[in-house]
Amino acid sequence: MSQKVYRVMARQWRPEVFGRVVAQDHIVKTLQNAVLSDRVAQAYLFSGPRGTGKTTTARLLAKALNCEAGPTPDPCGACDSCKAIADGKSFDVLEVDGASNRGIDEIRQLREEVGYAASGGKRKVYIIDEVHMLTPEAFNALLKTLEEPPPHVVFVFATTASNKVPETILSRCQRYNFRRIPSEQIVAQLRTILEAEGLEAQEEALFLIARKADGAMRDALSLLDQIVAFSEGTITEEAVRNLLGIIPRDVYFELTQAILDRDGAAALNVVARVMEAGGDVGEFTEGLLEHGRHLLVARVSEGMEGEDLAEADRARYVDVAGRFQEDDLVRMLQVVSELELNLGRVSEPQFWLELTVMKLVKMASTVALEDLMGRLEGLEGLLKGRGTTGSRQPDRKSPQQEATAALPTVETAARDRPPPTGGEVTLAAVQAGWGALVQEVKAQKISVGTFLEAGSPRALEGGQLDVFFDRSRTFHANQVTRNREAVETAVAELFGARLRVVCRLDGDAASRAEQRDEHRAEADERVQMALQIFDGEVLRQ
Image (tube, rainbow, N blue to C red; front, side, top):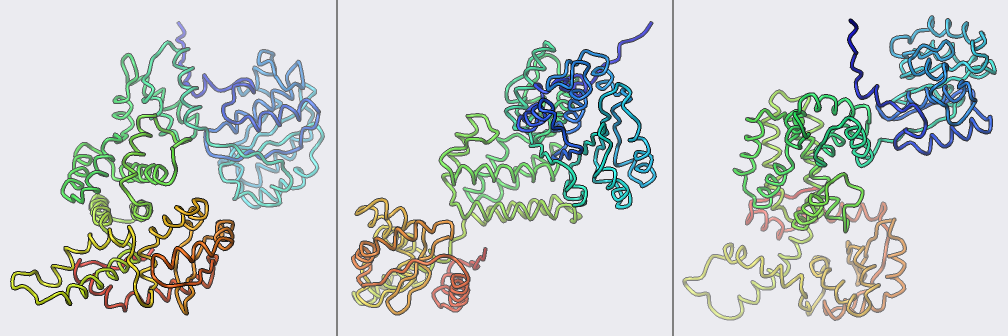
């Protein structure tokens, strides 16, 4: 008695018609039009990530050319030719694995075969998968045939690394780039399959599968097959996490809270719990990097449209990201990225993960050098003012203690509205009061203030204040220049000095100015004083 053999979902649900190919509409439409107008090329190169439909589309093109009702842009899938191609039994469609048939001898044999006519009297299609694996000699042997193939032959090359295909081959092919499939479309396809199979799954469980598949439909179907076999009844989020080893998002939010609280013990405790539960350091680091990216996106944009997240998670990221500075998130991502790059080279990955987590905790308390110098500028004036009011009381704190206690108050005052200097204004004072200046200009003309906000003061010499803008903000710089008088008036009111404001674009001059400022900052006794008070260090990006 014969027993029915189970076909895995990746094979069972492989598209049999062009209309079922997911997320590659731009390619499908072009190929259908080519078949319809009889403008089929002699060679195609399909490139893109694994599992995105390259080989499937190549087979569909072969069906379209050899269907008994065709050539047709919509092969029937039911005729003998279509069935033979689907089952891999067609004499007119030859699939070659470029990884295992990569030598010159295999290509010579292929060259000898292309001269024979198609058995069905239509087209012979040669599909070479992972074509970039062919040797240079094999590519050279293929060149002449590829340039002038018999009229009944079509080549379709598929690769995940088009950069490794010689230019001489690329120039003889029509190229089509397959995109990663968005998570929403993967989820929709998984939901359709589950409904057809009579199965149920939680929405978040399907999103987890889609994210784990990383844009590859074949990977998603393989994971779904595995999870269906593991689950009893409804596929739950917990079941998917347990089977795939995915660390819950709540863990990363808990770690983020510990970083915000500057609680190193709590942060290390999060790592310890994950490792005790069998978590993988690489998996945790990859998830932490993704988590940090979501925070940065939430911080720099008004919403998180296009992110593969449930609505509740988007709201959560927006809320938490608002408690970080953009620069802090960038530095934190850089630190985690360095860990990910070096994990394969270290002997104790958990130790390096813990060290990185502690860096993140300490990094949350770093201060930008420009802000620190501005705060010390105001503090210097405050201490001088106190020195003239009378004799020192016996129970007063030391100058270092007073400086530490007074610093937050001075910061607030400097950022709200810096007092007029009454003398020569310094660059540090302008930088410290830049936010107040922007608000002052906005109060007069909101558009000009918004444009000014995109710039940063970096040089002050001879009564001229140089404000630098990124080259992508040329329009902003031009608008500030056109309204320079209003800006200069606001500067005079805030800082008690008439300065000429000049807008510049980032470039070599800006880089040299930043280098000079950096060296000057290291020698500045105020910076040295701050480093002693806070036991800190100067960070460079």
